[in-house]
Length: 109
Length: 114
Image 1 (cartoon, chains in turn green, red):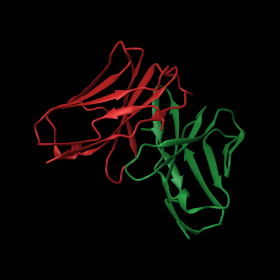
Image 2 (cartoon, chains in turn green, orange):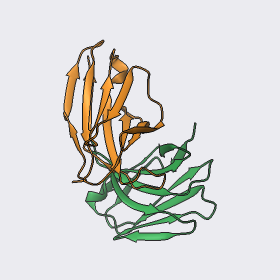
Image 3 (cartoon, one colour):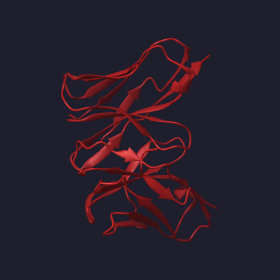
């Protein structure tokens, strides 16, 4: 089945640093969604992307929809402790909805 | 708060039993999705309903079933439970249920099968 691969799998960074993570797919997606999940909680939608090449920001978060439509990137600037969590990319293809493997972010104060 | 509610928050039951998880979507959302998240696993899409009708099916076991009622709330029924069914079960809702819809997730139900 479809698989969305995220890298890196985990990151340990100092507070204040910028973070970059990406998501790749073997298939074309027409929508990319980025979610953050805290332990034991439901994923929270951060950013939605609908067009190849689109660059969208939400506060310190910026995400891009790759030109090939097979990848997407999420950047977090000036990280803070509450950025800790697991970040998932997600998207629909056909009548299925897929989530990526996740990037676990740890911010060291 | 996403506006999606799920009950119960925790459920502990024995193997072989049957349980029902409940989800109420955000006001105005017509579509409900169910996901399973096991330890160290990502979110696995189970099934989607739109306005009372099944719209898409993912990796849902035959022992599991779901339905969406006229008031748009949904229930996920898990039967003949096995230890491996222990997981977090999330419900999400969206406005139209179309492929590009943004899904909003509930807080989840943690199921423990002993």
